[in-house]
Amino acid sequence: MYEINRVYYDENGYPYYNVSNGTNLNYDIIKDKNTILIFTLSFYIFLLWCLYKLISYQPDNNYNYNISSYTKYLNKPKSTSYENLKRVIGLETVKSEIKYYMDFINNKSKYIKWNVKLPKGIMLIGPPGTGKTLLVKSMAKDLDIPFISMAGSEFVEVYVGVGASRVRKLFRDAKAKKKCIIFIDEIDAIGGKRGHDTNSERASTLNQLLVEMDGFDDLSNILIFGATNLEKNLDTALMRSGRFDKKIFFDPPNLEERKQLFELYLENVNLEETLSLDNLGMRTAGLTGADIANIVNQSKINAIQDEREENNISEKNIQIAIDEVMIGREKRERMLSPLERERVAHHEAGHAIMGFLLKDCSPPIKVSIIPRGQFALGFSQPKPEDRKLYTEDFILSQILVLLGGRVAEKIIYDDYSTGASDDIEKASNLIYRYCVEWGMNKNLGPLNIEHLGKVGKEISDSVYKECQDLIKKIEEMTEKYLLENEKSLKRIAKDLLKNETITYKRIKQLMPKKKENSVKFKLN
View 1: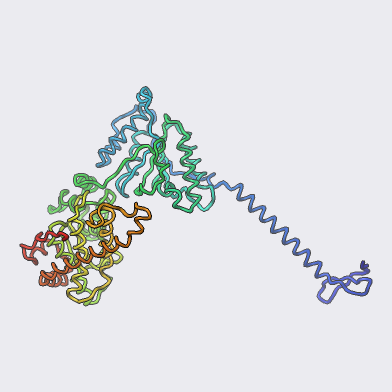
View 2: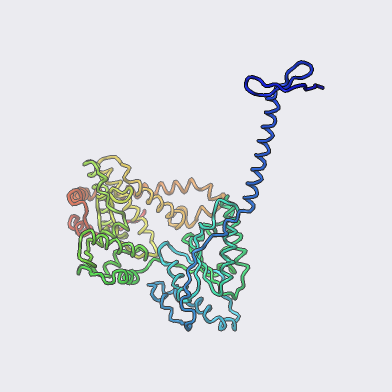
């Protein structure tokens, strides 16, 4: 054992001890050990502090939902006129069903006598822009009750348990109110099928939603609405009876509803004599109410830029707006070389001729070589139609039209370009669905390989072969029809190079009249 006699300091000011056996014990060793000990203790104290903060973290203490109170006239007599709901254009079948739920809340005793239970959840299913949110808000206004709205994505956060916590808070706040409507938009963000997603946080949020929906009284005045355009992706537990009991389907507006929408949005606006609501309704087949509102708004912007008189819109203003919504905005700064421009003209002429010749397809109403949108260097716009069913002849004719541009390039230049990539993608999708989903292929028959398990995987090669053979036959027939009309192809391309945009009226002048709708395509 050493005996320390005296402390000395070296030239750097560090202490060391004179030990009795004559050796010097450097104090740096002692200093390093103390430093390590202090650092280790500090690190563990920091970890404990982080753990405490994580455990005590309450992410939803100050989280506010979008709560709209429509209780402006709480003491007024109950009304069944539903003025706000009436102002929603179209959706008559949907509104008649919604009125039942409204009557239940207003006259609950009438239904209790019959032991009728209000559905806990109502799922609104339809394409974006068809009025799902608008309808629920109108319903809440007519009922004069609070309207709590959230998007499905608001439940999902990086912190574990936040989604489930927000679901609990949402239902706790709703139960505290006498009457309430909960609206969860894009519910597929949290209600997707479990087992297909590795996100455990999303699964726990969905589980909490299911528990909460099971936990409130059937006779309570809480209505839950969900909205989605991806019904197939929703979990079956969410859609079973006792949770989202009812499904309400939304469709894009029909011709009459589109006319009413234009009448609403163009109120106090003067139109040119050549424009009519019938004409506008026919031009916008397939568009939603949100699209039509966008068209009218853009038309007004176009009129302002043209320095027209207040509330006066020209046909040009509104046609440009329709093209922008349906096809994309013109990109004249996307300059093409003369050779590229000529190739695009022949490509679009090929589409136009096939649409003119074929009997079972929509004719082209406008053809242009002006670049639009992100990628399009030109377009051939078919006549919009309200279709719900598509026949085999129509689908095959659509594929011929899609291949018309690519084949026209092959005839004129004896090679292909990248300009047909979008056409190929659309044609491939139609061919696949023709063979697999719609059962129209004669060799495969009405079988969907996606639902045949291992057997389906084994015959996938033969499905590819059938698709390949079919597209080759269609491409050969497209080339045959265009070769028969090669002079007209060059004539239309030349006119496009001169005028940039032509209508169906001009196409009819450039094509032999007897050729219109003269081809009835059938597979051998």
